[in-house]
Length: 195
Image (tube, rainbow, N blue to C red; front, side, top):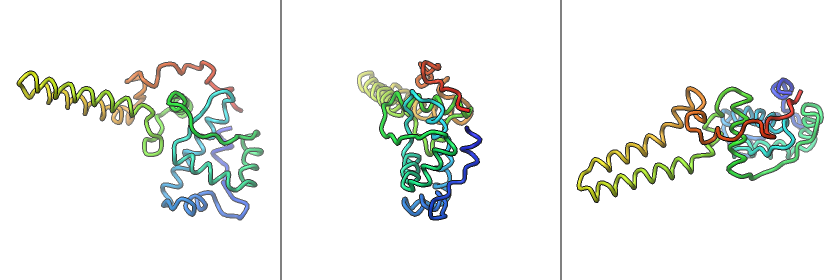
């Protein structure tokens, strides 16, 4: 299935390509539109290989999906000829759905999804932990009469915020942090293998 999706040329009923339509509708420059379409291909693959899991598209990919569906003939032909089934549009999803989508991406494509399009589903947790570390350090400095607890708290907060980005550049940051990695071990979310 991935070979069919990767090879598909997204031509519209009007003869124009999907990239041109995305740029026209969104006002994006060509590099952003093409990057979003590339990730749309990957997202559609993740969505198509399972029937039970709920996949959540990042904002730019969701926008490409909407534009693609706007050309009903082209979208219908893509579903029938390439995917061999209809994919109904779904939006929203829980934080857990986002985590499972990121896990599936890593599993299927062997790398973390690009951060410029796929936001980290645990960014709120990172900010909360960093905020607690910084606040604890500042309080410790205020009550302890020394500046060092504040310096250490802020340094640890920066470490928490910057480490996931750094870990994602060289490998699986989910395995390092253990936040996303927990729980998505094919428990009904491993896909049916596609074809």
